[in-house]
Image 1: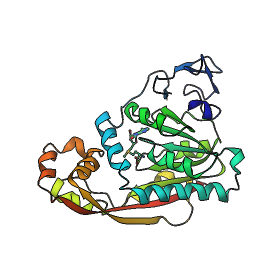
Image 2 (image 1 turned 90 degrees about the vertical axis):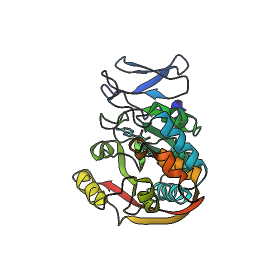
Image 3 (image 1 turned 180 degrees about the horizontal axis):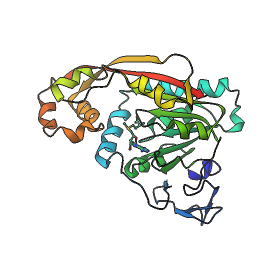
Image 4 (image 1 turned 45 degrees about the vertical axis):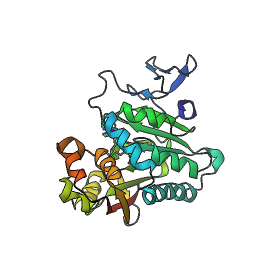
Length: 286
Ligand SMILES: C[S@@+](CC[C@H](N)C(=O)[O-])C[C@H]1O[C@@H](n2cnc3c(N)ncnc32)[C@H](O)[C@@H]1O
């Protein structure tokens, strides 16, 4: 619910504090800007000109929900929530302090909800530019506030208000991450590695993962964030049937580029072993 994180949110126009009015049907800033809370429980926090793009479509979000809820990425969600718990424990934050976890590009809320389950008392802000995703995000956990925002336009969160930021297969804005992190806070990123879902690439014609991704992230973060330790590789095999493969591809941008996708999926064996590969990297402020 937005009320659980209202002290963390900020007016996207000028960064001033927000409060809930009219039974939390609107958020109003100290400077008088008003943002309607959608019936589904999320709020769009965009400066005057609105959002520049839509993010994941309703079809992609539905495919993501189907695939993730089947548990195929369980090792990924375990790693991310475990790293978030470690970060909170190592920083010595007690449960009563209600640590704040911000997830950027949070999608359906699958990862954030697991993290909130794992850290008693933690509160979550999930940000995504897709309203289709925000509808599910808002329902994903009682202690999660769902916000629609474009993180390239700025993160509508107070300075030094967040204990942990998690980013799973989603865009990063290191300058904004450094601004909103508390001293001693940590950023956890999960990024696909070269060879991720390799067995599907050729038969389905989907795009490969570039080898230089981690190096590019390090360069982008220069001056704001630095790696805390070496990236940890995570690799596991999944047994996927055609429906799961269709959902996996449907939740990725590849879905938009491959016209004959259903026909290609139909030609696959009944089940396939597909390898998931990613790196979990932790970052601290420089
Ligand atoms: C590959 S999905 C990952 C979603 C989620 N983290 C997961 O793994 O299930 C990337 C997400 O980032 C969102 N996104 C893309 N660009 C964004 C932006 N500029 N600001 C906020 N969210 C963005 C998309 O709408 C999408 O939900």
